[in-house]
Image (cartoon, rainbow, N blue to C red; front, top):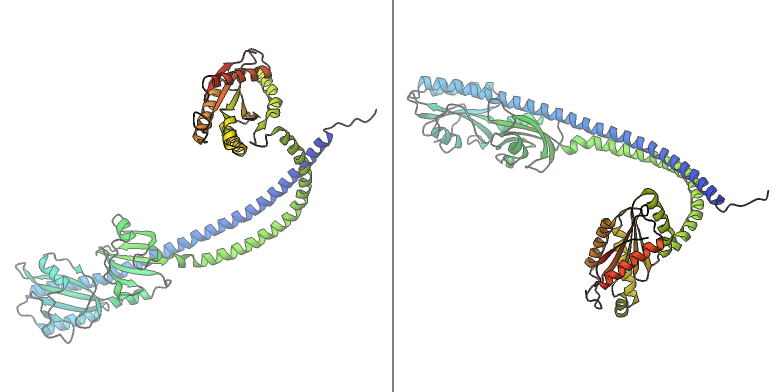
Length: 517
C-alpha cells in the first residue's frame, strides 16, 4: 500500500511531544516550588514561634517587675502610714499645750533610724510652725504653712494620709515624697500636720537594682498621673503628668492591673508595659521593656536564619535552573513552531486596525453557531452596526483620525462583550458586526444600547454630524434555528435591513428585525 501523508500528523505529534515536555517542566517546577515552600514555611513558623516566645518572656518579666515594685512601694508607704497614725494618736492624746519636745524629738529620731526609706518626721502647728522633728538642727522661724499638703489638711477634715507630689526638702535640699496626716484638737478643729517624708533616692536605688535594658522604664506615679519616681532618673520629669498616656486614659480606669504595648509619652520610646495600682494607696506602678530590647536577640537570629535560608534556596534554585533549562529549550523550539502556525492563522482572521475579528472570522463561525443553536434550541442574535456620517468624518479630519476613531470604537465593542462565545468583528470600512449566541432580542437590545451609550460618552468630536459627536446606527436580527431554519446569509440580510431602517429613522439608534429564514 502506498504511503499517504496526513497533513496533521506532524502537528499532532508536535503537540503531544510539547505536552509531555510541558508536563515534565511543570512537574519539576512544582516539586522545586513545594520543597522551597516547605523550607520557607518551616523557617517562618520557627521565626514566629521565637517571636511569640520573646514577647511571652517579656510579658512575664514586666508583670513580675510591676508586682515587685508595687509591693515595695506599698510596704514603704504602709510603714510610714502606721508610724504616723501611732504618733498622731499619741500627740492628740497627750495634747499640744505642754509638748515634751526633747522627748518627742528623740522618738521621731528613733523611728527614722528604724525605717531607711524615711527622710524625716515633722510635726507642724496649726500656723505651720515646726513643733518637732527628728532633725538635730531646725531652721530658725521655719514654717511650712505654704506647702500644698499643709493647705490641703487645713481645708479638709479627713484623717487618712495624703501622698503629695515630689518636693525639695527645705532642711536638706533632698527630693522627697511627703506623706502627711491631719492633727486635730479634742474639739475636732485643725491642730496641725504630721509629716513623714520618703526619700526619692530610696526608690531610685531600688529600681536601679533591677536588670533591665537601658531603654526600659520603671515608674511610680500618683493615681492622677503625676510622676513621683522614674527610672531612668531625670529630675525634670518628676511632677510631670502621665494622664494622657495610653495606660492612664484607656486602661487604668477599667482595670487595676494589666498590660499594654504603647509609646511612652515621656520619651517617645515604644515599650511593653505592665501596670499595677497599689491596693491601699492611690499610686500606680508601671514597668516597661523597650520593644528593641525585647526583639533584639530575635532580630539577630532572624537575620542569621534568613541568610542560611537564602543560601539554601539559591542552591536549590541553581539546581532547578539547570534541569528546567533543558526542558525549557525543548519547549521553546516546539512552541515556536506551533506559535508561528497559530500567528499566521490569527493574522488571517484578525483586523489589523482594530484588533477585532475580520469578516473572514465571522464567515468561519456564523454557520457553526447557527448549527449549534439549532441543536441546542437557543436563539442567536446578529448585530450590524455602522458609524454615522463617517465619510464626512474622514473628509474633515483625515484618514489618520479616522483610523484612530475606528480603533476606539473597536475598544468599545470589545468591552461590551461579556461572554467568551460572543464575537465582535470589523465587517468592513466603518461597519461592525456582533455575533451573540444564546441571546434573545431583549438581551441583544440591552447590549447594543449600552454600546451606543458608551460611544456617546466617548464624545469624539464630529463637526460633520448633526449630533456633534461620532455616533452609530445598529440593526438587530434574532433567529431561532430550532423553530425555523435560517441561513447565515439570510440572518446577515435581516440585520442589514434593520440597520438601514435605523439610518432611515434618523441614525444614532438601533432597530430590531425578526429573522424569517
